[in-house]
Image (cartoon, rainbow, N blue to C red; front, side, top):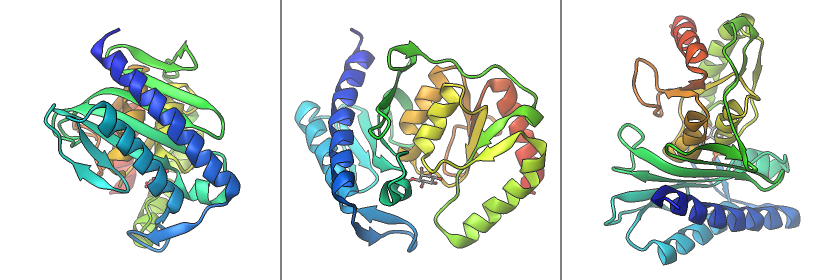
Length: 267
Ligand code: IPD
């Protein structure tokens, strides 16, 4: 087993347990613990509890690694590796009982910054569906043992495109204006509400493309690796890495066309 596969094995074991915990809490009923950037941007007690489980399991198994989590922040390490964690991506789906949310765990090398990091392994687990997406750098992307390949290129007019919206009302309005100008030029839009799973949908061919602006590193660390290892281009546009400014993911030919159309409809 390579080093990256060992890291993945650990990530899968922890994500599976974390997902089961989140699903069990969902069964009992979910309570909002606090609001973050806006009233719509909530954290549940289950988000916090799930992240605490992930963080303590990682600290036990990999005490020298750093940590970057959505709910409990950063912890620096000495090994040069950092675990980037969203305990429940798709929190609003989770809150409403929509069975489309995920535990997302990636391990990256270098500074825990998407501009420079190298993702080594990642897992995205939807406990409500049981789907577990995995990837290792150079080792491909998989869903339930099946190797994933991005959908073949299509004309943008035939592309099913996923996107998402931020929590700030003004930002959502700007994003909706972009969708309004884009939607007539593609097959249709999907807004599923969980960025990590959107990226896995590109990997498995359920979406031709996905783009969003405003993502946090933990939203795309694992899913971005799954998409890239399935053959997608994952880019921030203009040859830059994906960032909070922009992420586009699709078959490389579709990604390039989408990037130029997005530039047109954004300005
Ligand atoms: C959100 C989801 C959503 C995306 C938002 C993210 P959270 O993450 O991934 O799909 O559109 O930009 O913030 O808050 O549910 O962890």
